[in-house]
Image 1 (cartoon, one colour):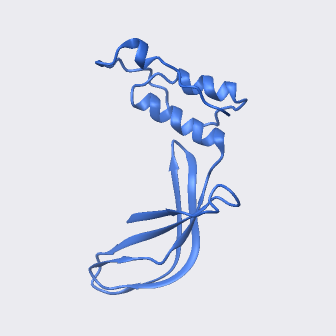
Image 2 (cartoon, rainbow, N blue to C red):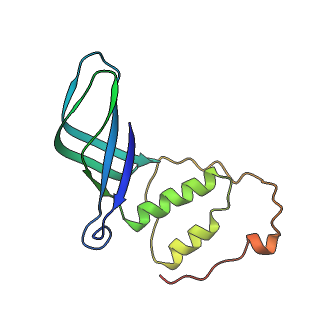
Image 3 (cartoon, rainbow, N blue to C red):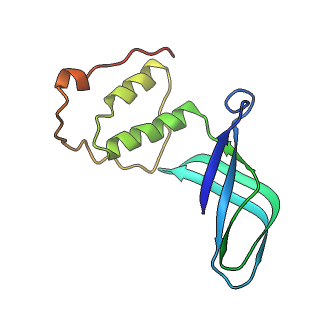
Length: 140
């Protein structure tokens, strides 16, 4: 399955819904009639979004079919997003202290995740230390 996303004008304002369409590859020699799609997207044990919707579309044998628009309910909870961002930074070998400081400054806490801190990986860089360690101002 692959997907296409469309953020709506209401996304993040009145609800956390985005529209997605899913490409379904039917490897079978018989057509399929799809009546419901249930899916959860997660990272490090944290749900980032879910689809749970009835639908009606057919796939031809041994072909790829694009679904009609489906509602993806996105998890816009700041602690969840901060936790995933921190885990991704650690996995990329980056220092997580900037995100940790922002979370503390904002009065948030990280949520439990399945991420195992492996420590910071030393990386060679041509960026001077004073540039790499600069903290950009932001408004919470």
